[in-house]
Image (cartoon, rainbow over all chains, first blue to last red; front, side, top):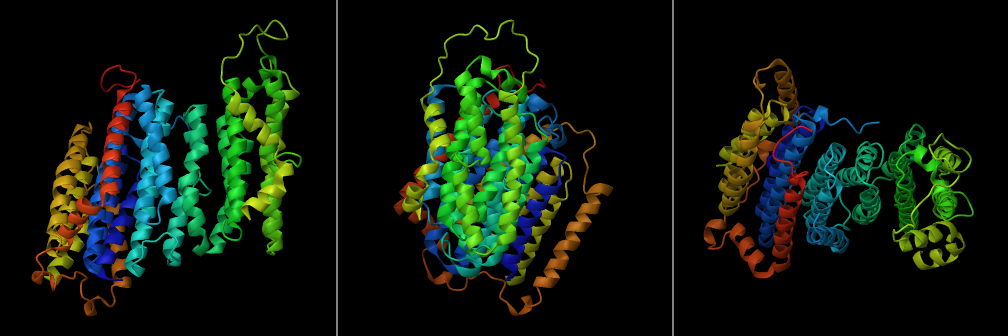
Length: 98
Length: 348
Length: 173
């Protein structure tokens, strides 16, 4: 495992663990999701450079467009849950549980 | 919601699934899954009450995380092998991560916890889309990935799902949660044979989609989301109530009905391959699911909950809902078992 | 240059540790800004200045600004920084985990090139990332159409989600 691969893998797993284990704020969860997308962007770009597949360097930009969509939808959901559930604590999202 | 917006959303749902079906590159498959997720969100949230918003938020978080995990696994695979093909045999570790993410996307146990809550928060029509159409794109990926996933993982997911799907539904009175657990159990049956006989997975998926469409449309026609509402449904539409019992028993997998077809073939295949204990546990876990379907049937046909009607049949308007799809799927749900040889010939 | 890139990668991971250890959203957004800046720098020194610029403009300048703005709106009189006990525990846990994993996987790093191949790009007039952009606009028409479609779709999705019951701005029902 090269240092580059190690660092983006670690970054992604850290983002995933943050998203999984932390239940405080919805905003924190969305930030962790963005961190995962950042790790993926770096990974795709460096893969392009490493393998010299020139055509593939369009892929990180497509990824960035999609992650921007995800981020905006996440923030829209933040606004919507703020309206229905009050503060954006993930603990407050409990009216559907069994 | 404006019809034009609805057209954009529904066509994007179609676009996402079609992209995932057509792609051989992981990035395009991921893009299709993302479009699918984004397009369903406003449909889930269209009532704007807190439960719908909560369900939408949970669905979004789960699906976005699972999609990111799929892309991460394929990126790692590309770093190791330089390949982005979906069908290219990948490293076992990345295949495992991919399968775990796909299991999370469709709601297989042990990553199933979001499914009952999300289904409980949305309307029955959206629930129908969630439990049928939204499963197609992940299943297209599962069928391609299953070839090089560790077989023990698939068996463990399958056993876990059927057991959890059976046990979880026992304690519920809300029909949408019961249908969610039934979905988990059925997905467990499908994933069991995803490696040894993918065509059986396809048969099970098709019959599941038909049966669950019939179930959701029936409940939608009765406006029923609780067991207690089912109990007085015979006063409004007696024929539909009689057929609804058969639909539920077909979901449970009783022999003269369609639901028996996939269970029969899957059990036969698993036994032929020599996994006798697995087949036994799967067959026994179907009994758990059958229990809550039977309980619903009992509530519909044999008991009379206290109600406020003065007469035996209440005054009612003629139903205006379109029932073409409902009657078609009900007939397919109840009468398709004799077509087993044709299904086998077509798909195997 | 190799060691410089390595330090930047360490900075990227540290930024993510700062996000993952569950501080208040102010600090998490700051950690993500650090991580994104380090990611830009990694890409820039390893031979993809255009992708670094795209990351800087879109990710840092477009998305993270909105996140920082939303976290500034979060009404939290005593935000938990990284020095709070609960946060610090997790920070230490994640740091130890990263260091342990680094020690386990990094046994042979001193023999490896850090990973970026930028040695012969000086002799080309077309950089790898520029070539990708040319390819995207030249022959990747359908991908652009998909991207444009998903951006339009997101516009509708966001509008439908935040519209609510048309009963004004933020309120708790």
